Image 1 (cartoon, helix red, strand yellow):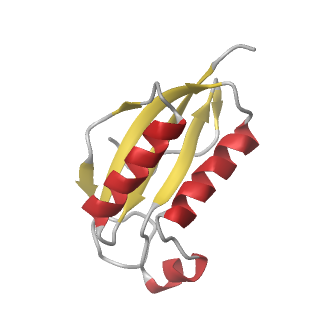
Image 2 (cartoon, rainbow, N blue to C red):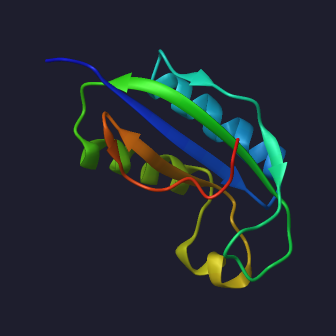
Length: 113
């Protein structure tokens, strides 16, 4: 099976350095060829709370299908302590979004990294 090139973005606004580092280590273990861009602090976009986010984008190759990749991301989010009810309180311990899967745009990047 052919490898598919993908991009992801991860972000956090709560204990951001610690949570981004933990997620980055976990994702690097799952996706050995992952290549990380520079981590940047950004203003929240479409989010009602003023806390800055630490965001980082990465590219990787996979033979997994889109759903399998998203399930891996959800597992990493849970292992980093993300609780669904916290977002309504302005707490984002970690958020991992699949931006592209091959030529398909899965989610539009909210911030320019």
